[in-house]
Image 1 (cartoon, rainbow, N blue to C red):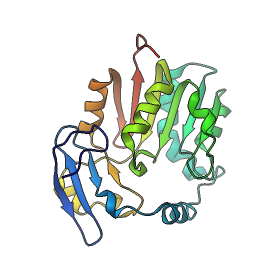
Image 2 (image 1 turned 45 degrees about the horizontal axis):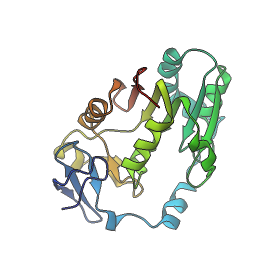
Image 3 (image 1 turned 90 degrees about the vertical axis):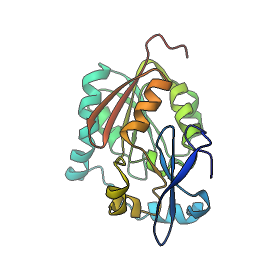
Image 4 (image 1 turned 120 degrees about the horizontal axis):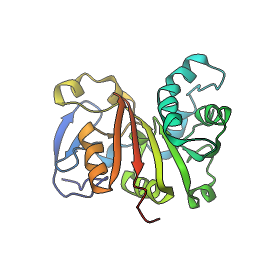
Length: 216
């Protein structure tokens, strides 16, 4: 079997299979992931993203994002500097944070590939509906930890795996661009390993805080 793309553990086992893809699960961090050979090519992946219609003026989309924005704003204090990682073609959460007094940089592999922002440090990082798309989650996770200042917050939105039975009928896995599926156990593993404060706000909203004593 393949090594885990998140924690690099060498014990991964068959989890589920459908007509299109095979899914493996790490026996340490419990990440479920698609066999890399069955991922989309970059041009196919971007073509799928180009179909997304995330409009900053869409009240429903803003309400969706407010589920991570509101608890994050309650925790970070005033006038902070953040990064919206994987903001997509229509950045919206960044605007919502700016509207309440924060400064936000943008990064997206396809739409805002300004790599200089990845060399900064931030008071908060948001990644909404991003983590399930990552081909190299270990590298990106380490990158986020490096960019977070001591005491800074990471706000994640992603739907989480429960068990095999639920996974078998789960619509979330049917998106061809979804290749990494985290569970509560996965986030708990990362929090312990990386000394992060962890809060599950909703079933798909997760906040993590870097230790104030953690060196940068």
